[in-house]
Image (cartoon, rainbow, N blue to C red; front, side, top):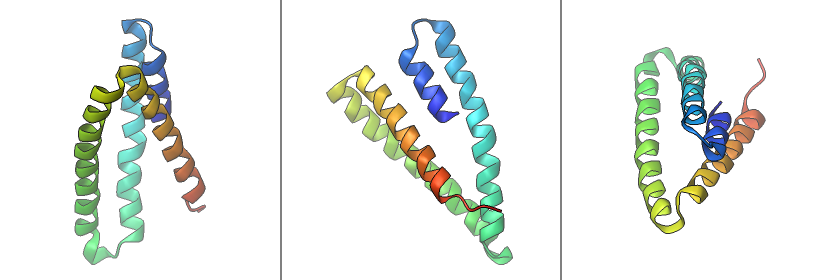
Length: 105
């Protein structure tokens, strides 16, 4: 859904498409957040689960700060179109990594 959101934003020609893209964010996080909690609960020992959840939250926060910083620099240097295209490409790369590295249960 992150890929769909970024593609819709990139190809948007009006505000309706922007609104549709933002609705995709809701579905992307609806999958991502519970999956990250489940993953920590499955992979981390019971005594360390709170620490594991804290590390996930910290990593998401730090990655958001870094992405905003890097995106601002890219926006100044390259322009909106190129930054949106980079978002699509990075979302696709991330989706491929997840698909290739997710364990089969």
